[in-house]
Structure formats: structure tokens, C-alpha cells
Length: 75
Image (cartoon, rainbow, N blue to C red; front, side):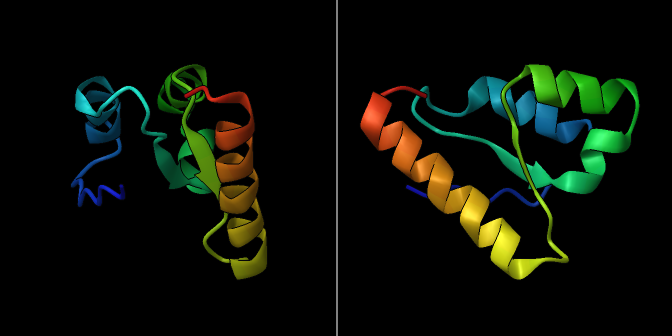
């Protein structure tokens, strides 16, 4: 499944991580990683960051994540 959330602030993402199903993987824009405490909290929560400016890199990250999830059968 793909759940698309149009959050209004970067802190909304932390709340969404708590309510999504166990087998879902949150994906966020890479810019959030550099927002101090918010970036650390997102990183520690297991959020996967993609670079929206580099389309091919973003596709590679998402594809690699999907392969890992299938292979290891983990979140």
C-alpha cells in the first residue's frame, strides 16, 4: 500500500510514524535530515530520506528499500 500524507509541518511526520501500520516505511524529503533535533528524531525513527532534486537517486533509494523489505521480511 501507499499512504500519501500531506503534512503541513515537519513535526507532523513524527506523529504520522506512530499511527501508520507496522509494515509501512515512512519516506521523507532529505532536507528534514538537516533540521537539527527534528532530523535526528526522524533518523532514529527509521524514516528513509530521499533527495527530491535527484530523481534517479530517489528511485534507487525507494527500490533498494523495497527489495530489503521483501528479502528480510521486516519493517
